[in-house]
Image (cartoon, rainbow, N blue to C red; front, side, top):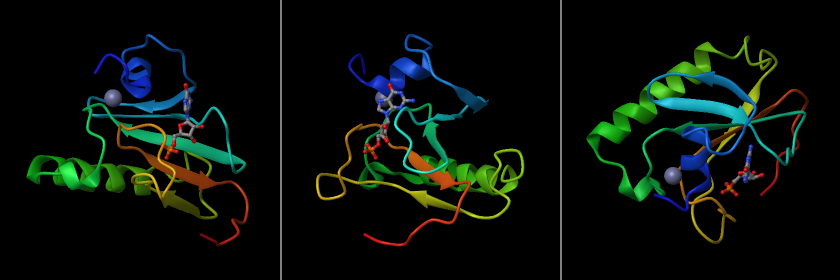
Length: 112
Ligand code: 5GP
Ligand code: ZN
């Protein structure tokens, strides 16, 4: 996946402000934050859409949500946070490597 910016970040070819990494996910700061805390949680395996999720990836995503939930204090999100997964054109997905936006650090307005 040579042209994928997140694969390049995962490989260390593009710098990023990493806040967490293990064997299957990485969490780094979004370069263009829309909230006081705006992190991106990215599975190391390249796939673009939830429609590509098989059993193994479903388990990976389940473990990922479990990890995010356990890390809320260390990520500065004890007052609450929002997870967003943009999928496709109408959602404005720009990076086609599945990722979870983690938003928090302040009260978040609700909207589309
Ligand atoms: P999407 O719109 O696909 O859901 O989200 C992609 C996100 O990746 C955007 O919020 C954008 O700011 C972020 N992003 C794009 N390129 C880079 C980059 O090179 N480094 C970092 N840290 N974030 C990026
Ligand atoms: Zn990728």
